[in-house]
Image (cartoon, rainbow, N blue to C red; front, side, top):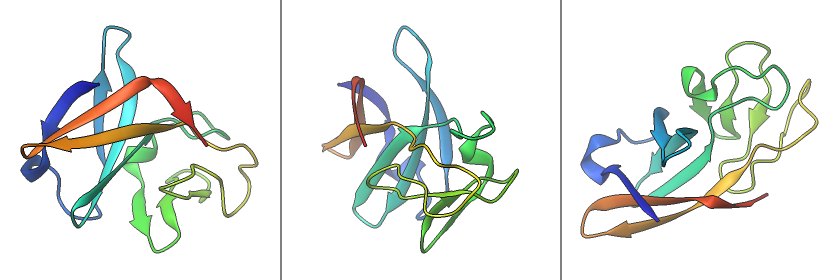
Length: 106
């Protein structure tokens, strides 16, 4: 797990982009109350940054073609994307956000 930011650095339901770890993995963080979601910050359809989109009730919406990805699973809920994006494990420790970019789920 790598410390990415403080929980207070994240606005509720607003995407935030970070590069995490030695490989500078692009990570999108979304705070939802006391929970934080971490997804690969790269649309599986158009390979653009998802953090430039917005968070809707269905997930994070890609700004380019409108595909929406579930914050918990990374699965697309609308076309044109058909492949999920990677989801990373998140831990909150003492008000800080830690992400594991070495293991993905989706």
